[in-house]
Length: 215
Image 1 (cartoon, helix red, strand yellow):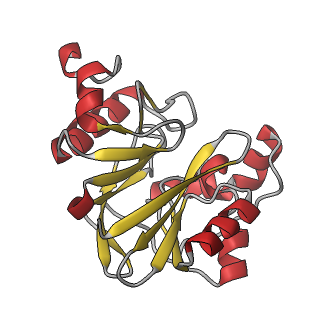
Image 2 (cartoon, one colour; image 1 turned 135 degrees about the horizontal axis):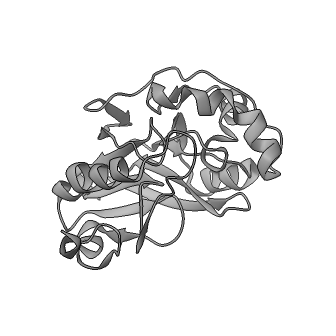
Image 3 (cartoon, rainbow, N blue to C red; image 1 turned 180 degrees about the vertical axis):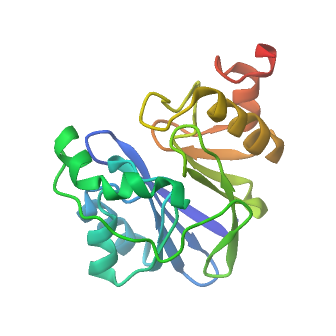
């Protein structure tokens, strides 16, 4: 597989930060650095890769809380999420207080991402899918060559993202999963924002919120 990955659970919420890298070049991206930057930096050192950017699926504190600090420390550009999550980025200091997280700085992404965009990691290209519902600006990263998707908090093994936060919407989230993610193919494996990996095929069969038999 030309795109490698390592999952690094961070923060008290055990959020799946991912280190992904191009095997040919050793160039890497950190996806959703929510916190515990020492853990993330240890993983980078252990894998011997060179991080060239930060990718964000959305801007909840457990996914984005360490972004500004990591970007400054390693001089990294920030790509994502979709600009509809800007209000969550502006609210990071309040989110940190509310959930008892370390202080978190506001930042402005170097590139807001749109549906249909692509991002590169070394020589590898990932497609960007705008999948609102959990948050309005949530995006998913899909690497077609290896059949891997990084879905943030859109979909989990046996569950879906919460929709009771500001600008969350249950029907929109279900539509994002069924119309954007499932058509990518049953064999696609995904890294969720929390918990174990699964495949779209498995969730189509058995996920109580979005399985095919729910109609």
